[in-house]
Length: 279
Ligand code: GLU
Image (cartoon, helix red, strand yellow):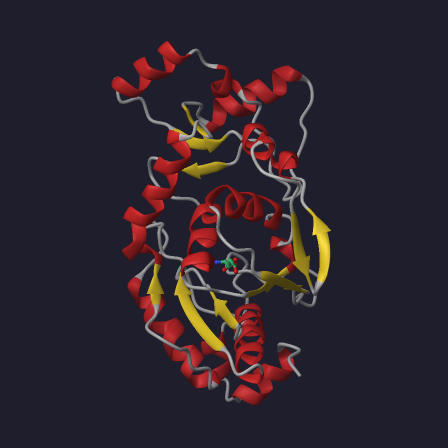
């Protein structure tokens, strides 16, 4: 089977060096392996994503000499497909509506005296709404109370065999339970990153996922969703993140220098490659 890789930025700002690294690693794997390289816009959050950033991403990639196969996949065009996945999991009793606000969750965690954290650093949801009686649940849904949909992770894990994923060719055991009941959809965002990314990687036939090592822990949840949906597991290669001079990871929030800034300052795509630690 020939290799398919992808670069999946969120158009919430201009690309910086960290993105250049992610794009180049995925593109290089595909081109060296005579495979396909896909470009996917993770643009389901209408409050943060902007069309001008999508356009800028295409320009920046073209400047770097990165080309992609097929049209650009926009997640915002695929909301009904994500909804179908949610409906499927709902029909199997593997997701439940959660009516807790963020403040309520914080309060509940404080009251419990323990604050376990998932491997991605997020607090684990205490499971309040999982224990809600069916009648109360139905009543709130009928009354249109705002809610998110959470995966009943323990039940989901119990319904599939023991899971592994392949990281740089070596098996890594998954412990999705350590994430608790993750959100798969919200009122204001019709599908979560975990749901969309696993759906798209499967439907687009991605065989090798390359991305920053900050996303390595989340792969356990992705593997679980793949197993629940009968989707194939791609191979994974998580790479080290670039750090700024102060040793912090580059981020849009901290105004990391963008590729546009670098271009305007007279730097070449080759300079970017070197700065992005690409060989
Ligand atoms: N959209 C994610 C990011 O920009 C990438 C997710 C992934 O590669 O799975 O960090």
